Length: 248
Image (cartoon, rainbow, N blue to C red; front, side, top):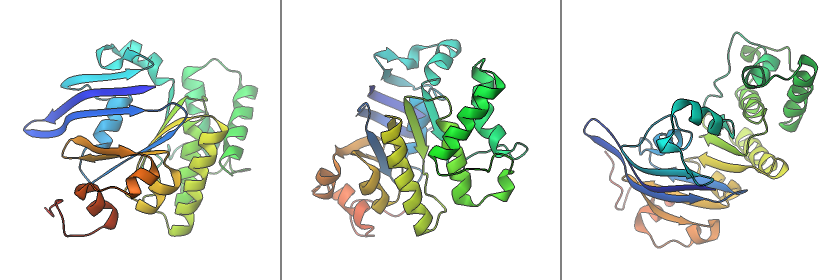
């Protein structure tokens, strides 16, 4: 569904992506792991067309989005939903208004239909009766769930998750992981998740890719990744200070 070929991106003299090759399978959850500041979020922004590569290609359903203009990209982006790390809710809007926002911006649906979709999406993430609350009244876990409800409001085919469990306690982390799994199944989503949480990646990921020094150095199923002999990946998974990954 998504194919990334020889992707390169630098910011000034800093090379962030140095020939990334990766295929994202349709209807599966692919988790991208790697060090903080290692380019995972930059890769995610290329997939949704927020950044243009210096060279290389990103194919979505066979269309190279790196060659599209902004209007063409807007049409492609309607296939996407995104859950940002901090949920990125509009603080001046109610929960219901936040979830309804993409529907009001990009569709001509009537108010009654939008209200029903908002209710359905909130129910899908385990929230009911919160439409009139403000984001400031919600816990961190609830904000994440509202963010996910908004991400799936337009029934996208692809949802991007940028470190969805960051800042959550272990109980809420487990709840969000279960929610990602259930949402992916119920809406038949292709999901791409950035995560540092080793326990989480094995729970939610059908496929796992390790980004290191601008390249995908390992890719496989959870079982294949657990059995890896790649020293970089093995060090990352164990959290050891000893190994080829240097502390800088």
